[in-house]
Amino acid sequence: MEKFQESMYQLIVETSTKLPKDVRRAIAKAKLRENAGTRAAMALTTIAENIQMADENVSPICQDTGMPTFKIKVPVGVNQLKMKEAIHRAIAQATKDGKLRPNSVDSLTGENSGNNLGDGVPVIKFEQWEKDYIDVRLILKGGGCENKNIQYSLPCELEGLGRAGRDLDGIRKCILHAVYQAQGQGCSAGFIGVGIGGDRSSGYELAKEQLFRSVDDVNPNEELRKLEDYIMENANKLGIGTMGFGGETTLLGCKIGVMHRLPASFFVSVAYNCWAFRRLGVKVSPETGEIQEWLYQEGENVDFAKELEKAAQSVPAEGREIVLEAPLTEEQVRQLKVGDVVRINGMMYTGRDAIHKHLMDHDAPIDLNGQIIYHCGPVMLKDENGNWHVKAAGPTTSIREEPYQGEIMKKFGIRAVIGKGGMGAKTLAALKEHGGVYLNAIGGAAQYYADCIKSVEGVDFLEFGIPEAMWHLRVENFTAVVTMDSHGNSLHEDVEKSSLEKLAQLKEPVFK
Image (cartoon, helix red, strand yellow):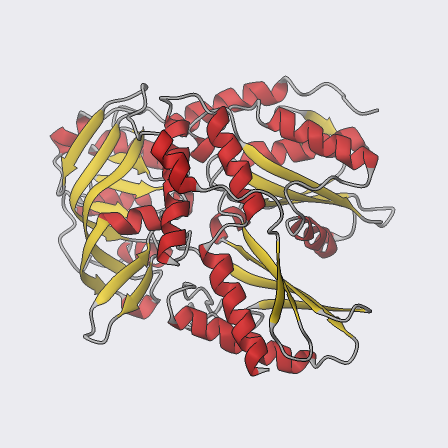
């Protein structure tokens, strides 16, 4: 079991820090399809750079290292209880080493366990089989894309598509709607797993199971193969694009499975996964616990270092490049417009769900007037001298802070908010009234942004846990795109509206 624990640690680290070959190829193809000089092209170049940095640093691709979910097949007679104990020890060690962010939170007290262990965490699913080796597969699916999972009960009415009935065409409409509703909040371009049938829980299980398939495989069910091909072609006509900036690629993969159901129920369940599609697998010897073979390693491996040499990073033609020195004035913010690329120097302060809830009823620990709040839950490590270091620091999904954001900006004089996926009408109105701006960073680019953070100047509310604490970060050349300005403009609103119009064009029946 000691060797098995070591093998599981290797699997966890590799899954967190290195994308599998099939996913890398899908991202490289998307990069080639995108039009030069667009926001989407800039975002994909940043993504490629982030993948390369994660490779070199052996650090998390995305700061949200997700819910570790293991799918394990074992020969008869293997001690599953001992295997579970070994996996728990490997998870705790990977967290301590900064390869996983401490993500296990008590649902009642809000307390973070600090080691990614807790009731139901990690998720480990065992299945016996008659083969003579252990097959272990791991997926790290972050909270941002997990929140865009969706389940439909047919028949139903869908925005833009009308009635979806209990047939293949109704299923088609549900899947298209699932891609539409995710917009940029799930860190598009993404992958989806679809489960047709089952009950509420088994349908979601089937959907997530599809994410363990290879991006390049072919569905043995001819009807489902045609449906997968149709979705891949038409979802990419919606124009949502990378990060929801608009563009040619919205979906990188679609895998569909089916199971029987009850006569009264017809569920279509969709598991959405971001571009940082972290899932790997190994074959393990039951006798020695050693890794015999790595899975998902078929085919060509994309060297993003070479790809980046060909592609110079440039400012999108849609906007200007502006350097900002924090703290910011209202005058500076009022001059910014949607589409501008900003490069920030100075201080910024992280703030997620716990911080926003706290600040509604309490004073801030520091003067936030003119400052920048970064929606980020970083991976942090403390050295032997007690100094904190940032290991990964990409943006989290901002829409969760919609109930608080506008009021907090006005209460404390905050001038800019950085996150991903955009915010809603309440925040947009506050930006216009107060003189604020929303800046969209590239979701999942945790190494790219960690490199922009030059020092950790302090921390407050560490009692909330590392992801939810307020970190004081000094940054240089921190790049983001203005997607909501102080003039009432929102790129997210525009893309959602245009993609709904394109979705409506796919209303007519396709499959009889």
